[in-house]
Amino acid sequence: MNVLIAGCGWLGREVGRTLVARGDRVVGVRRSTRSAAALADDGIEPLGLDLAEPSAAAAIPSGINAFVACPAPAEHSAAGYRRTYVGIQRTLLEAAAAAGARSYVYTGSTGVFGQRDGGEVDEATPPAPDGPTAEVLLEAERLVLDAARSGVPARLVRLSGLYGPGRTGLAERVLDGTLALGPDDDRVMNFCRLEDAARFVIAALDRG
Image 1: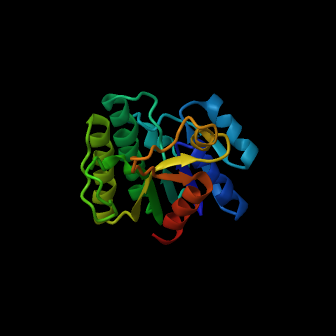
Image 2: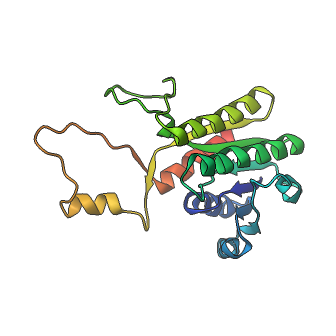
């Protein structure tokens, strides 16, 4: 495949490295040319491009037939989330439709679930966003699912908190005792290891 990874950060770069290793062409997009340049070390073609800009679709290289959208907001506000998640989704879905893409994967978030009643949540649970940024995440999901109904082979992977090389703060807090359960605590934390998350994304890319 010729894959464009939008938001080629910690997760996107792991996905890109894995795809390159198996022989796929990967173009990695970051907001600036300077930050994108480091991707070349992993065999990923770097592209500095703000995909939230209206003209960005025209700058996407020809020949791309698969898309992975895993953006991260530059600003943690509803406006910042809308520009990143909704704006970028519109650009990429437009490009995917024009290219006749064979696959499109958006890495959403379990943050669309705001349930606090202790019940289990799975894919069939109705989202219940509990704040402005979560509402934007759900809006982005709907764009992707609407595109899927219109013929774009779009898939949604909702990820929980990630940990892995360089990001092991959770485990360290448990080991040093700053994070622990008390005698009456009944808490659940939902985390996914980086490499496992990358495998899920690639499985969605390959098989839907």
